[in-house]
Length: 290
Image 1 (tube, helix red, strand yellow):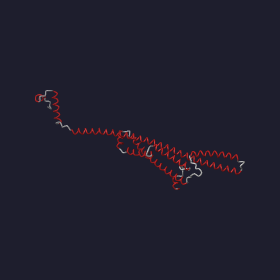
Image 2 (cartoon, rainbow, N blue to C red):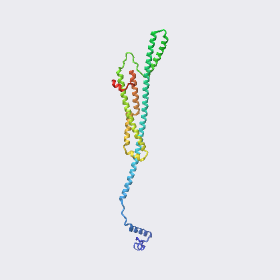
Image 3 (spheres, one colour):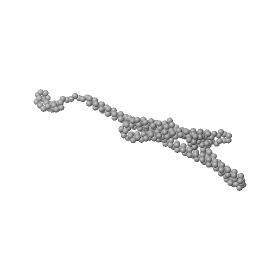
Image 4 (cartoon, rainbow, N blue to C red):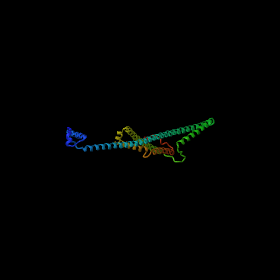
C-alpha cells in the first residue's frame, strides 16, 4: 500500500474509490516512515487544563486584590483629608489663643500704666494744693479733669479684662493661691503641648506613608504588592492613633470645645481672683517657689 499498488488495493482489498485509495496510501506511508501511531497522552491535557485554571484564578485574584487596594487607598485618603482639616482648625485655634494672650497682656500693662498716672497726678495735685492753693487752683482743676478721664480709661480697661472688683471687707485670695493656680495652668499647658506634639509627629509619619502609597497606586502590580504588604495596616494604625490624639478621643469639635473651655475657664478664674495667672514667670520658677 505504501508504494501505491492500485492492483492490490482494487483486487485484494476491494477499494474502488480513488480518494479512499489515496488516504490508505498516505496512512501506509506514515506508518512506514514514523512507525505506528502512539496512544493519546491525557496527562498533558490535564496539565494544560490545570495551567489554564491556575492562570485564570491568578488573574481573578489579582483583580480582586487590586479593587480591594484601591478602595482601601480611597478610605485612607479620606482619613488624611479629615486629619488635614483637623490640623488646620487646631492651628487657627492656637492663633486665636495666642492673640487672646497678647490682648490680655496689653490690657494688664495699660491698666498698670493708668494706675501709675492716676497716682502721680494725685500726688502732684496734693503737693500743689499744699504749697499755694490760690495760684494752683486752675492747675488743680485741670488735673482733676485728667484724673477723671484716667479713671474712666481705667474702668474701661478693667471691664475689658473682666476683673473682679473686691469690695471693702470682702474675701481676698491669699498670695500663695496665685502661685498654685499659675503652676496648675502651666502643668495643664505642658500636657496639652506634649499631646499636640505627639499628634503632629504621628500625622507627619502618616503623611509620609501616604505619599509613598500615592507613588505606587498608579501601577497595577504596585497596587497588587500594596494589597499583600503590611504597609497599609501600619499606616492605618498611625492614622488612627494620630486621629485619636488630635481629636481627644472624639471629633474635632470636642478638641475645639476643650481648648475654648480651657481659655474661658482661666479667664474666669483670673476675673474672680483679681490677679494674672496665664502670664507668669514660668513653671521652673513656680516649682522652686512652691
